Length: 128
Image (cartoon, rainbow, N blue to C red; front, side):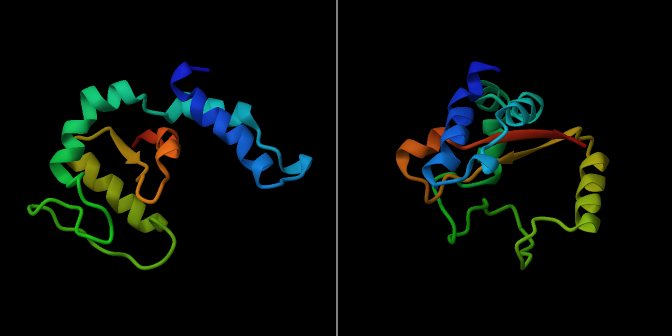
């Protein structure tokens, strides 16, 4: 496992123990490690290749419920607990293909996290 994600894996190992999970519920760290190896975006790559784009869209000094997008951007607010329904996700991917993108990122918001937990926030890169 890359040392980059060791803090997340260690936190994952301890999480269920802290909350009194039974042995049957203990996390499968090998699956988590493989997932992070495949999709995890190391902070060094985020900083060098993606941070500038991220900060050009979002006002990183603001937090929800304030408007976090820069003035030139609009967003569509969807109700519910699901980020995308299948049809919405397919439309999202189609739009990204049309502008020549091959990947999209999901950057975990750290709003509300206590300071010593922010190191565990994930940045994921997924292919289209």
